[in-house]
Length: 332
Length: 257
Image (cartoon, rainbow over all chains, first blue to last red):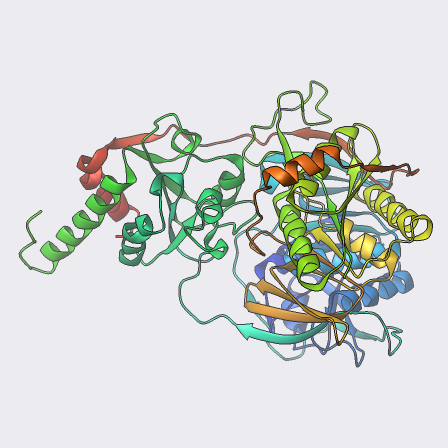
């Protein structure tokens, strides 16, 4: 039996997470067909999908399927699954992927395993491993259902752009049966984020916690982040004390970051925070407590007060830049 | 504007999680518990909505008898009523949890005459993180449901609500007709600390206990484990301001300075 996958796209750009889900769908199909589902008109995904082993593209077409709506997308998927009866569906564990799958699962009364890190097809059931608490715990589970629904944790990778043209892909239009008064949420406003370094995509994140002590205390961290072309983050303590907005919070209930370098200033490294930054390639911890979990898990550590260490690092970067530029360095 | 908030008893944020010897559950003997951070914001928002628009706040949880502690936390913040669906120790799968919540809501509606204009959930639980219980409950109750919400704007005259949620590309605003449901996320507000008066009131409050029958679903947990950590030993670069040189050496080596 075939395995379906959902392709989210933003103006024809397919996120890496969806291609990763597609790869796993291919493994689970084990020789059977992999079929993709796209909502709204096909922006020319054919060649990208065909190159990744997809044989059929189901295009969900309905006058209500325009902007994203969780209930409409979920109901449409549920109806498609009822008609096509695939062995399973693999979607990306993105906010939207999890939301569509939860809606479809609820409406189909099927079980759903979200945020899987491994899935194998065994006779009768899929054996899987899910990430809990941002990946700090792993849950092994068995999924038994007529159609098995899973989402997979996104990994690092590059987005792919659609390229219109012949692909040999079979395209099938699916028109869901949606009443005009179908209960749903309507997207009424969308504001695009301006360009610039964001916490989620920054190469360097300079983050502060309890040890920073106040909102003013973040000034040297801002300066260091500026010098390194990075973004400023913070721990939950900094947010609850009102030192930083919640949008700066790194952690399980904030943003999960995976920069080249994460500089943790005065952050003890509780579980809640650790799961937000453990994806960083390198971690530098600055803390007065050499036994703090953040220090013992970091790649590099400095023992000391962030109020002394961070300004000294900023001064040292400036001094070396001045030397490189042939200027006489300012006296320390 | 009557608001129902569904909360979950979870290990305190930042707790070190140990597993039971059989690897099937989290060892709770030495853990402190809390309302999940997302749900704590849901409780706060519900209390603010009831204060602004009138109406009552009901908190509902499915879990062990000890979850009464989290209901009292919500009552001490200012919720009016608390309902516990005691499903005993051990974890339910997400479909069974949703089923228990739906049965409880129906009992409250049919037997106690309750009517809810808004039903709020945390976007996902802080421990199991199945990302679906709220959606399942909303679907079963015939309510529209938006997740990841960090802003709520009610228009009681029009009978609508606007949900604001940040996404990778920016911010999306959804509109739903009331009654409606949402999964909210931390950052929606800064939850209050309970007052002494609130705590005393919560101690005396009566918690309604409901019983439901639920069956396990096709998602069966077979065990929990910790992933292997592969971090090499920490390299200590020095202490205090004197470490600046060594730090910048590392920054240059990494190609960021």
